[in-house]
Amino acid sequence: MCIAPLYKETMIYNYDDLLNRYANITIDGKETPETAFNILQDQTTPELLTRLKADALQHEKDALNGMIKTFHDLTAKGHDGETLLTNWKRNTPAYLYGALLQALKPAYNDTPRTSSGDALQDYVIKNIGLYPCTQNARPLCKIYDESKNIIDANKIKDVETLQSWKNKNVSLFAFYPAHNNFIVLDLDNSDEHANTTNGIKNFLDLIAGVEMADQYKNYFKDFPRNFPCYVETPHNGIHLYFKASYIPNNWTPNKGDLNALNIEIKYNNQVTAGGSIRDGKQYILRGNLDDAPRMNIAIIDLLTKGRPQPIKKPAGSYKPKDGELWNATPDGIISKAQELYFNDTPHYFVMKTAVLFKKAGFTKELATEYITQTPQHIGRKNKADTLTAITSVF
Image (cartoon, rainbow, N blue to C red; front, side, top):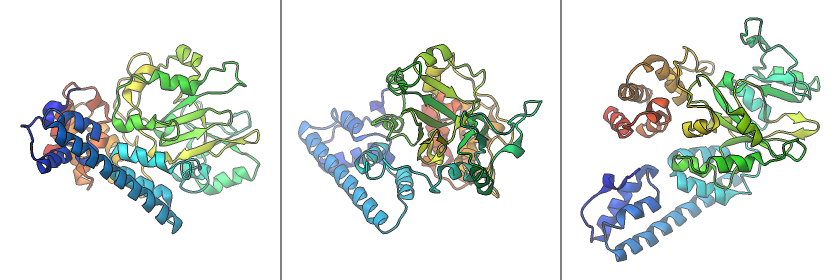
């Protein structure tokens, strides 16, 4: 994608004017400093560009050092580190946020990061129903009735029920990603399995050429530490958690190819939850379940036979927490928009969805982040019109 024409201007010979142009290009983290330098190299003198690079990089270094100091000062006073990082993630350019996570490890990133202190409780608190299992991962209760409907009464939906199963010496619990709008990628890496190939390395090799946004790219740098939400399995594998942006139709994984690579898509099948213990070894949840990124459609293309087509979500596919309206969260708005505007053209889908975000009190930036992850945007040719339509609403 050629972005230079978007910022094409006359030649700049004044340093203050150059700083202003640089700020316009990088505002809100839309472009990285490196991209801005490439754009500006034909619009100013080499001397001014060299000065700009030095000043910009020093500013970035000062900002990063300030954030690191603030993080350590506030956590030392008892502030929650997860909350601090969540706030910075919303308001910090992706490249700078990635550098912050890199700088904070191992002091922060090497510890299990859960909101409640008990990973299994995190699932229940976030309305992700759990099922108790034997040590062989067999459910201890029925999941579906004779008509293949989920038996909701058998889900563990509160902390008290979870504790009652723990009191019965049950330590392994599972959930179904498809029931909770998740997709999980199981990357095996064990010498104890018949297939000893490294699924983690194979996955990184597989997605190396995938086109994705800068923030998404940062998730796979120093992998998996920078990935927002994953579970470490007892045999050195990992479960990557993604939010399902849409319900896949004709979901057909490339099972043969993926199995050979030790990569498995977990969607309609059960996944062992973080915090479970199997044969004395723990599944460790790292990150917050709310921070799981939406699945990148280009990655789906690699992992399935043909691109899954979005289908209309049934009413109520987004399940709000008790007392929460559908428009209380961005995910709820997207789900409602898929229900209401699925048959509209991409232009009107984007515009009407942006109206829902605005009426709910969300910012243009947040609306853009979520709308640009929908199939309606990803599948259209004129992606620039998405930003134009959103801007027209705000």
